[in-house]
Image 1 (spheres, helix red, strand yellow):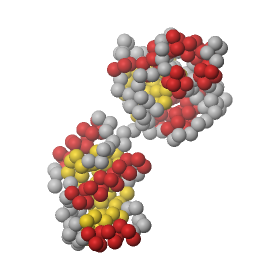
Image 2 (cartoon, rainbow, N blue to C red):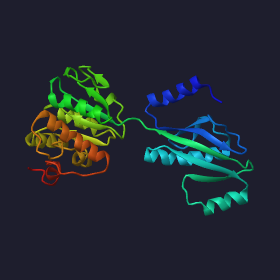
Image 3 (cartoon, rainbow, N blue to C red):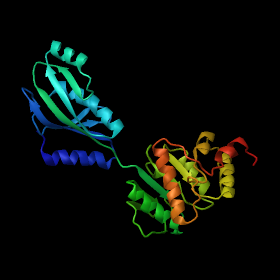
Image 4 (cartoon, rainbow, N blue to C red):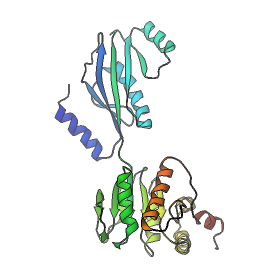
Length: 287
């Protein structure tokens, strides 16, 4: 069995790299099994055992498959693995209607209960600011943290009451250096001439959501500039601009709420009404 310290260091390393993984732990056994209660294994996002063991190749092949399902749902569960001879395993597979019961062909004759626990990196809210006091930016940090997002602010001179999880204040920070991920939600709060440059960088990244806080007039100008720069039309049409769900927001708190509603809806695959003109501008470039 792995030493606890070694196991902890290993999964901490995966977490630091924002790698999804599953920890499979033997919690109970019946009969003859190689794995014993407390045995642990780490399963990668590709479904491979990359550390530890739950007791040999037979149960581990089954657990690897269940781990991939757990990563999709984000929910842990107890899986029963029956270690039977070929005929009994086939019979059990054909008759069982429980998706959390697996019959594996082996001669052990025992049963293992294994808890499959997925670890997914927190969704990130990335705010790109312009410096100075911005109540919308401040409230986005507050709302983002309250909703479980890892909050990151890229702003050379922020004025914030709420501390984000990560703050990047380099004056000449090259946004292209930032490691964006597919689950990131990015809000552009650059208020003018930096809009197009920031959006151009984001067009080359893979993120779940990109939104721009701007007036209709400025969105129109920014879209025209993005076209001049050769930014792909598909990306332009994907920008949430002006950002936020149409809830009639007026105050900074309400605007931040409308933005977070937009982000959460997108996360869950929902489409809510916007005051957006990006699609219309795409159809009518001369507007």
